Length: 342
Image 1 (cartoon, rainbow, N blue to C red):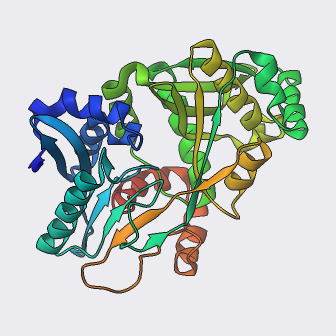
Image 2: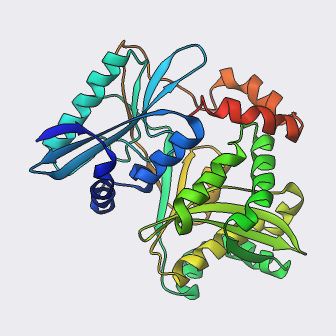
């Protein structure tokens, strides 16, 4: 087996390998690489292991530099999942060693593998996040019965308040972006640039949909969802504060689940959340069981695993200030900040 750098000639074989691999994900596909390169200008370093011309494993990496010149290698930026994707222990080990040698060569502070399941035990693990995944059943009754009683009541409350859903693409992007940036500003979090979402829709096509919730002809909430194989992954979204009493979030995810069973999707991936947060509790209340994500790190210079969690006390002053920024100011500054928080 030979480790080789990815080239455009590998694209179809790469994506086909990822699609059938047990550890492959939407974020391992070349479309995600394309989006990050176009929007953020990161340097991609993608590698594969081949045997007799057949791919046996892949490792997608991005080099991320901060304004002070510090460097990191991440697999993968802005992604729930990443890291090694291989069919055999030997292919996995070759790719892991390639990543480690590259980290030393480039002088990075750390190399991060965003694994779901730990790949070996020689690299330290951080279990900061949990993922929430559940089957989408066939038909309304089975899916409704799988949701705990309290959340079923919230869904019906949304229906009673006259909420409606629409699903589409670019026609909803401007209103979606206003809702998304308002929600993130209120959480004290920088938002992505508008261009990021434009390019997601351009590159992904039907693999990227916006489900919007409306009340009295006004968009109240929306979620951008990735559609990959038989999976739905609601990934970016929010709701306007004045509509939260109408159970817009419960209604929104119910309508997305409806879209799923009506269009043949089998898996609802609620994404990652940190224990002790409102998002974590919300997903638990929907009947989803948490699974820890085992992100692994290679630290060429030793030291501790980095802690970039918003719960880190050193970030609290920044979060507090960000929550008080006018939305226009937050939207102006946010895209320049988020690039360095992958």
